[in-house]
Image (cartoon, rainbow, N blue to C red; front, side):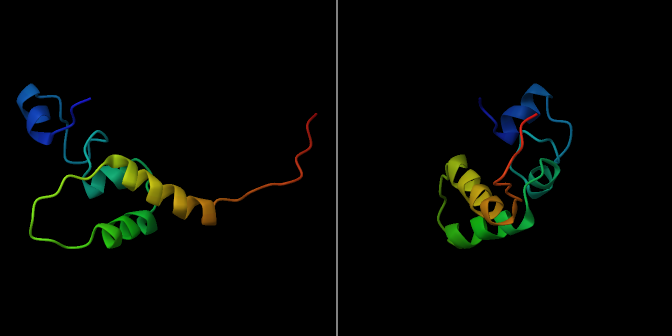
Length: 80
């Protein structure tokens, strides 16, 4: 799926900058990404003046890392 904001603008599909298909901060928060995961992702990619291409799996890995620590886990489940 091609999710470039310019492509979405041309096709008039984009609703606003919080459209969940985009990778803007408002869209990520709307999709339920924890702020700690977004901060961790930004810290890992760093600040650079050159144009870089990032794979979305890197953001997903940061989200998984944060949720593994904060998500409640239940060991003894009772099946009825």
